[in-house]
Image (cartoon, rainbow, N blue to C red):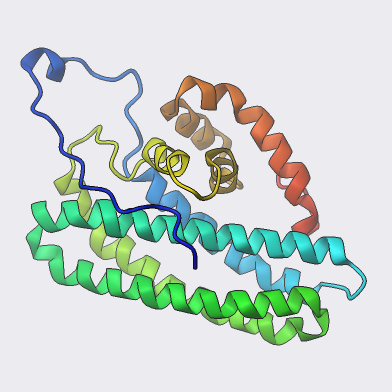
Length: 243
């Protein structure tokens, strides 16, 4: 799969003066929300994609093309997620939590294995969207891939996220939604606006308000427009409006 995030050096947090430490942000970013939202969105779409594939009709090229575009977007977001972890987050954890190195090495290796699996299924999805008669076996392949990914996500959530809370201080931007959007803005990949509405689809409204409050003013101002546009563009994928 294409690379969307270039490796960068691990961020170095400068020492804060007493005055700076006393100043608290108006809104403290929700810890690791960016990571957890990506996990939830991947689960959500991989759960409903198989049925969307099975419902494809030979004459419905519009739906097939939309489904292919959405699959390409999912794989691009997965690539960004893995590269953010491998090039930014894992180096920090290796430095400040060396006891996690074996786990981090396994997770990084499994990222490569998952990337290869997604590349294979991408080829199958492309075949299915061009020839819906082959969609059923491809749908099963997506379900198998979802189960494979679920194992990886659970290991991160159960073995890594609790330890990360002890490494990064409260208020850190590491793994947050604003950091993820900043990374996407600096990368040759999915647009932050597209990523944001994809990540927040189906999230509780109160939680959405809290997450949007973490973001910059431009994002907060544009959010209703981005959300409405995304709803119009994707409602046909699943048969019901997303908003």
